[in-house]
Length: 150
Image (cartoon, rainbow, N blue to C red):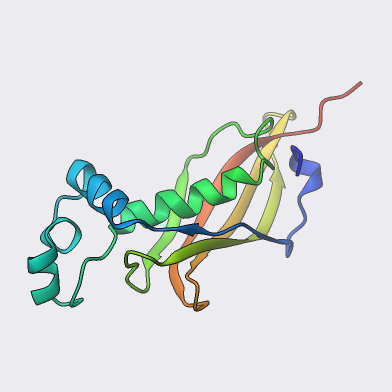
């Protein structure tokens, strides 16, 4: 795909990404650095814990799902960053060997009143596993450039 500008997004559009398989060592490496809880880094403790096995950190899951969305390239030349996200939910555990993909629905597109060269795209990002179970849901906000004139 190619870069899209603010005018190119339409509420209701849905984008689907490729899949990425979650590797046990990557799950543990991420968690050791950013979310060092036994359910993410200690296999015996995780097996005795509430999920009966090792699971990925929700932060890792969010990072992977966001990366898959960015890999589409739609915002590569037009993103101006974002002020945040809302409604972040981790709805099912992600285990080693799970393959995640993202579905992204454009919720609304709002031109800026004070900065005519940009606007805001708000979208719901849903992470799904290989069984089409939702593992993550979040509403994200990105500042997006308008199409260059001329």
